[in-house]
Length: 248
Length: 314
Image (cartoon, rainbow over all chains, first blue to last red):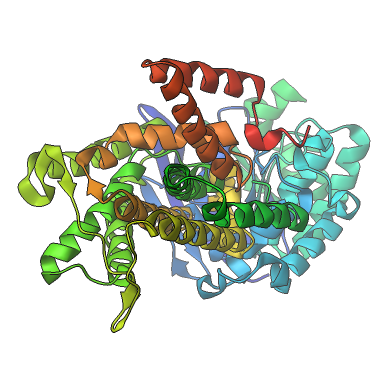
């Protein structure tokens, strides 16, 4: 349970809207922390802040105790933060293997080796194969990404996040649009990933959230409403009123 | 971007051999025309590193081409006598590459349409420097002395009669070198990263790639190669004028890339030859050659979305 990523009182507004307001969060290796909340609660904005897609207006982010607030996304990726996107965001015209190999390349190969032939650089290829094996896409490695099924593309999203050898995995609705059987398999994958990563999961499927999460944060209107063990969150009156009551 | 197979490259090598042997069977006029096409091919190929390689469409590319051309008279004036061609070629590449590095560092802070517009502005900046200052003969341009073909005491005296053949061989050799170099470059980790940026810049950044540095390196290298092409334009024609730097020339290089096909590395070479042949043919038919060129380019682009390079692969 080593602390890997810590967010302290993060805030971000868009115009007059406080998308994320005073949110603190700690992610530990070997645990899966879920963030739930109604649409517009600021969950995706939170992930965008933690992954450097957006800079926070206030607050700070620490990775291994080092202040990385304001770092761009590519620097945070190199610092060990991997993320998947809510809407599939891959190199659609390339093969699955090349997608993941490229994702592994920046972190694994130092800049001075960039002029070596890609086929001769083994580390990114090995990392790509390992990531594909882990998410179960090794059999479609040579297909063009755009030809994959929706479920497979969601898995490719996770493989891309894994390929950067992250210690923190930020997964933004990885189950979106998946069928029941696929969801079950992905839930098993999430548990597996949480063994050797600090995982932050944003998800709407409550059955999955309560079955895989070690702890849950409930966000409403950009703020943290409740935080605790899954069972406790399920029974919380405040959460039920604010969110679960309407949905479940 | 698809790279040519070994077989296709051997076929290109054969064509290059045929072209190299042209002095044996062709009139000097056609040798000069072939040199014009080869220079255009170098220029279009250098642009392809940006367009087909990294998905960057630039209208400043002719500025680097023109800087490479003006490097010849500027070096001659600076040194007092025509220097070795190795000196002017190096100076052209460094001048153009350095300018591209500077322009790229600023222009690459923008994306898409704004990048296109900022390259247009920077390109025209260079155009007006040569158009409105006495630096390179002003708007009339300048007839120039060709550099010396040789190094130190080893100098080849090229007679007027031999010159078209020598220039053809030189241009062909440089184009072949440039093509082979870029072919190898696109297979490196750097080349693959550029293709990744072209496919999905955002995801590449999110997986740890320093996208702006990669694009800047490509932009500077493409500028350097455009400078080499421009240098050969000046050496071939013994004449420079500000139009070499104008955005029109960038646009026609983009047309060549489009005509040949943005999906392959060799496409722009085919496009440059087709474009040069088309200009020559339409010139012999009508005075309104721009009209003929426009209609043909439009027809090709509509009928062949992957350009001439797509002809063989349906």
